[in-house]
Amino acid sequence: MRVDLFDFELPPELIALRPARPRDAARLLLVNGEGPFKDLTVRDLPGLLRAGDVLVFNDTRVIPAQLEGRRGDAKIGATLHKRIDLRRWHAFVRNAKRLRIGDTVDFAAGVQTLVEARHDDGSLTLAFLGDELVEVLLERAGQMPLPPYIAGKRPTDDADRSDYQTMFASKDGAVAAPTAALHFTPELLAGLKAAGVGHKTLTLHVGAGTFLPVKAEDTEAHRMHAEWGTISADVAGRLNAVRKNGNRVIAVGTTSLRLLESAARADGTIGEFAGDTAIFITPGYRFRAVDGLMTNFHLPKSTLFMLVSAMMGLERMQAAYAHAIGGGYRFYSYGDASLLLPQV
Image 1 (cartoon, rainbow, N blue to C red):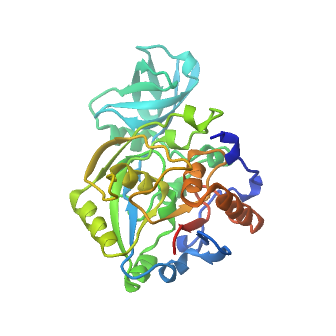
Image 2: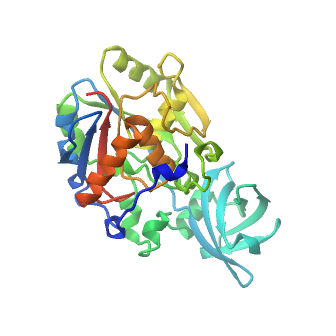
């Protein structure tokens, strides 16, 4: 499909630079397969789901993966996006043309990396030098990797260290937050439990490549960056039982959805999973593992807007986004949410 079909105009003042406070006070747009849209808040979620439904969250934790440093007189910026092993990461690097294989880059607080390889997508392999754990080095020298549409408008600060983590964050490794889950609070989770709505977690370490703009003119020419994820046998079995009993599996965030669909078998059951996924979901895709999606509002011509258009239909999502823009909904990572239910 032509990528420009997924374009739309967004007033820049609708890009959220801070999250709603409290988190579950964010607005929520209910989008069913047909009928009028409903303007609600995230706190209304327990009344929108059915007893027996299960929400699936991504429990990845964002690491301070944004680094600023120098190579000689050249300023170098690095955003880690996928771990290779204990000391090496793939990274997107600003001013990478000033680096050669074998160069050492000096980052803040005495952290150094060695440039080991250059890849076709423009990224580099960086190896962290020394004996300290890379996690310790990043906590010392790194910053939270806010998306460029936020970082370009204000500096990262201490508030982002907590604001850009979900209440489920427990597994280090993401360089971008699973932002739909940012809206959840212990109080909201208690309300969902009281309504008979359960929840489970999986892990997908979100990489920066997920949010890169699609530069190809046709979706067939776009290639996703791989991300690592895991679904336990226990979680897979429980989710299969939910659907067998006639209840719904609702993914919270596109990251949860993409991993569930990566683990789905041809018969729609979910299998145990551990490994990389580079699934790219566009209109025409047949969803096998999920019955709905809670997600934030995404960038024009992004793979994530293509994904929601695959679930609800392109015209339906174009209308939903026009409604959201007209109603002043806040967009992107710190913005408001939508609940997509193709079949009520």
